[in-house]
Image (cartoon, rainbow, N blue to C red; front, side, top):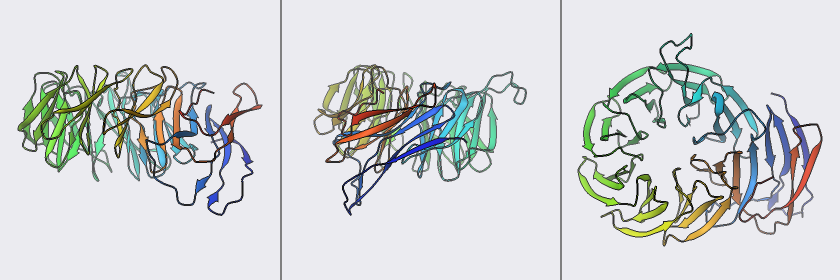
Length: 420
């Protein structure tokens, strides 16, 4: 990997409780990382969705052959794994966006990756004319999380379209033809497969030794060790959201505009109607946050599904919201900002500007100190703004030559913008 680094240490007031950061521009493989300088207190608070945001770094891909996808990045430890078009996976350092490695997996990714300390697992679509895998159009592979080298590959008759999920030893995926697969994480060997008789319409979820997954006709509860169907709840229309759960209640949304709540034995407890097909259902301390195709966000009570409030957004929300304490971050499509709602009353508490039409359906990801949002331009990392911020300098490398351009910008950005 080749890279040109420029370092510019900033002069700051001498304070024993602060440590200095520097800005750098990293140019590798035609991709840019813009890192904004900042100071971090010796004891930093945890991230808050209610406080002002500032952009820390941006991984740009605008002038490269690649595009971001409507797929959520994976995170393990201090590393991020961002899927791009043409089957390219990049590993970035979470703290500063530094490129760790790039892997060309071939084909196109069909679902979001998942990662653990040893491996990153990806699912792809490949052409049926592939000489090495004739008659196969789906592939799951494991890459080394340290180097991006392929460790094993498993071919499947059809692609895995719903998000992968895993426990300590097993990896689960759902394919186009209605099959659910369980693979060993260390070898890729198929332990069991289950045919559900209809196309699978939501991602598998693990809860209390069961695997929950929905198709066009209902929800399945599966023994995750053996693949045996434990029970099935039939619906009239396809299930459109992954299962979300508390210890005793299992909830999901359907194309019939309803949110369903079942007990752990599969018996209906209640159902609640929204204005259109349900896009996501998320447990929060006060109940269920529901996003619907009618562009409304609903808060329903967990006990009976009664509506506490509803709030209309500028566009539909396809990505899973990020919930932190009493706040939830939503990414409406077609707008220019991500919106934070207060879960107490549904009122807007904050926003992050990302540029007109720049949002995707990839879900946001958070650490203790940083928020990561995938946009059509790349990946952006935000943190809460520090007090007494005056001015910063962002360093951009010119794609057309060796010159460097410097853009002075205010450090405190609220809402944060990255339109350079």
